[in-house]
Image (cartoon, rainbow, N blue to C red):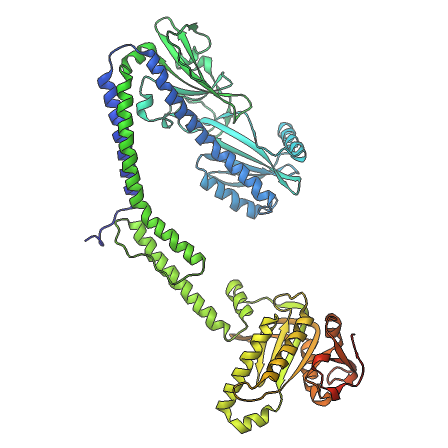
Length: 615
């Protein structure tokens, strides 16, 4: 039954936490109603301290996301992750910003030539020329000058009133700087949300009215602005002057500065805020005020107001309400911790599994613990599918790597088909077993395959240790390239050292019970590496004169009586090793005689025709 029934995580969180909030706030409201009955305007003032904190938190929560968005964009441009002149990249980035910041309304990116790419939440991006806007150009030039002086902090502009029955909107401008020079300007505008959402109903009610003013003269937020009470005839998104406080339809707010100030009986210290009492003909009004200076050129003023009569009715015996609220708060915290632990345990397990997968451990599976939460069940199924895919990918890579060079397999899996063609000067090593035909005749095909596999395994380990990549096995020979497809800083030296190590291994004793001899040719020159073949059947190989030269030098060992021959270009690129020059010898397919060398440490004494030297 438990496995068939599940509940959405969103439903659990919504019911759980909303139930806790309803319990706590409902208890406080009910107890306040029960305990009301005597005059206590000073208690009302103290209560507004909590309201001011909540109101400031709401305002910070409205505006901080835009500042974060702007600073993140500055960092991305500064680090080279975004080019303001690339519309395709810019469009994707800004759409992500708009999607992640719900109240963000307009974003514009202006390049130094005053061309702006403007984005709206519900409209397509528009490119505009702002060169004919003197005020805007002056503002952009001032920001660029500040940026060149090292001042890149965002600058907040004066708030605006937007739309038909609209809302206050804040704007911020910030220079985009890369390598110490401004490469553009980001301008963003965010709308201020309804102020009735700032506080729980138990803190506002009909007695306590919150508001926000700009420069003490204009109204930015008020419960009357949250609905359709105040409308204009302007277009839905047009910018309008801010609403003047003296003509605002809330009489208590309109008389904030013009009304007769009264002395308070028991003034409350609201630092960093203050209390102002205003005496009207029929009533007395208390305002609690606090300034915020972080977001606009002039200060924002947060406030609440209530009448003395309302305060007396609402907050008799406030200490009882506080005690009840604390008890409810403790119970709510305990319940929230229990609920959070219950929800968090599966998430913790998934997190540990994710860390193991990131570390390369694909052996673990998600826990099969029964759960009521549907998202956890779906996540567990998705994890199992992902792990199965990763394990299959790992198996394919391991299997693939046995038939093509490991580096090629890695690049194919990472980049897909077609694999790019690489050009570089490379060192090519061609190795071939001596006396292979006689060995085949003596041992038979099956035994020869085992000997060849043992020989190739020993040699490939040496070659890969020195940075070489085997591109082909040709009967009893193999073609190895250094510096392709991955660059090698000293490919010629690495190839010669690998050849010497191969010969030392053969000198140390039998392989698969047989003493084997090997001839090696090494050439260096321009080469191209890539996938070659028919459609649907390709092989990765290397082409170029260096390949042909290495094969010819390997065969020339028969004539010179040496085991390793290398070209003059290879010797020149690896001067740290001692060589014996064999002079200029005819190399089939080269057209002219080539100067040939053999490592001094590997040259048989009877093959030395000249003094040992370094090219």
